[in-house]
Length: 112
Image 1 (cartoon, helix red, strand yellow):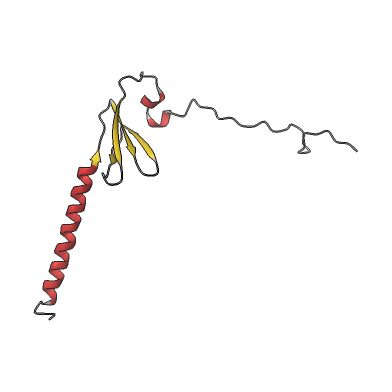
Image 2 (tube, one colour):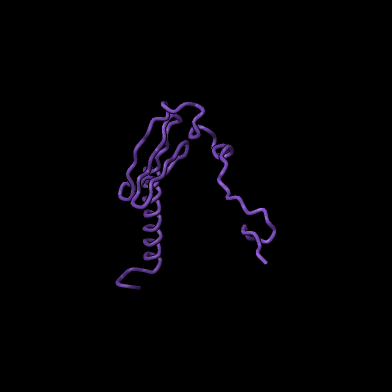
């Protein structure tokens, strides 16, 4: 007994406070979840980075992020942003430097 409060009452109050806090957190997260329409993109501007979400939802917490929406209706259907996610980088070829063809490892002729 602590100041006239039983242990079970203290435990019940603690469990109730944790449950109420969890429900408030989930409610806030559900309210901060933004999903773009199929013809829009969400631009999330944070303190350190800027992310673009096309066809995906994201959390935008007003204290941490700013959000802008951009219409994709002006982008043609063959633009890479309108392609499915896995198909975006299939046609790109990255630059790879040419290695010397000699087996010695040096591109200079040998002088002996």
